[in-house]
Image (cartoon, rainbow, N blue to C red):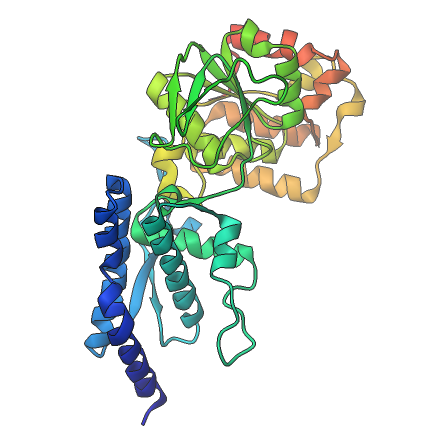
Amino acid sequence: MAKKTVKKKVVKKVAKKKTSRSANRTAADMKDNKASKRDQDTAVKLSAMAQNIVTAVHSDKEPEMDVPIRAASNTNWNAKKGILQMGDSVSSRQLFNLGQARKFMQTLLHGKSVDELLVADKTLSLRGMFYKSLHTIEGTKEKTFDDQTESDGILEDLEVSLGSLREELHIFAKKRGTMVGNITVVDNGDYINCAKMGSGGYAIPSICEPEVIQFKDVKADFILHVEKDTVWQRFNEDRFWEKHNCILTEGSGQPTRGVRRMLHRLNKEYKLPVYCLLDCDPWGHYIYSVIKQGSISLAFESQRLAIPEAKYIGIRSIDYERCGLSDDVKIELNDRDIKRAKQIASYPWFEKNKGWQKEIKKMLTNGFKMEVESLITKDISYVTEEYVPARLKAKDWLG
């Protein structure tokens, strides 16, 4: 008997014994437990994916699933909406294809874990999901996952396959990002006045959906988002948010989904302008691009994360002369920086933007990059008392 036929018989036997009675279990349990409509909808999608596999097995067909391709080749720039969007291309993940069987198995393992989270109405971190599905495959020395990076990628595949957000799968990431200002946040029922958070600020959670996070007493006029905690600390200590009636946030480098979702919601729900103070280098430019248009790897979430109206207020290439900075602040561009800058300049949303073309060209001509902290060479509070107020007053920014 052919090896493939034997495999099919084994899979069919297991499916008949276990999966046929459980494919719809999650949705039924969710309804009995009076779960939220969002959780019930997610459970239905998960059960449908499982049922498709069961049906294929019982029909003597090879189990397979279609997974949308998360790559630049399947990402489209929607100029009208000003965001990146995922295309329609998918790849087929087949159980009996040696090159795809591992990912097929991993996808179902994580699907099972999500099933259990939905029924228990509990959440797990990305790290927790990695460990929950980690074990050595019986009869081998091979582990189900080599590392968390592999696990995280499969979870994103599961998101796009189900058409569900990570938060809808009850999965959260490590908190990274801080907020302070004239707003009260209701976090899981607890009222948090972000104007009374001391020197530490409010830690922006990974899950910022309306079911978890609500806003009250939003009195701010705008949001100032800075790249790093070190810069955020200067603005917070100088009470910039109080003097200029704003909300101050930071993303510890490239902001997480939670930070971007928080910014997106405040921008859309309360029409708060978002101004970004980032480093003058290709990486600062890329962070702005991700906040404004979305990212290639998360193009399927751009509708709820991207902020097309976000503005870049600095630091700029012209600030070396404009602010009278010394040579000490110069950081020479390396080959990687130059290559990245040229890539960013060719992005469709930057390619026809004269302001950004001029900015990137100026940086390349200078031959050096600068950090926001370089403004400290002028004065400890120069960035909070002079630089940003002047940029805002003059409406001197890039869009």
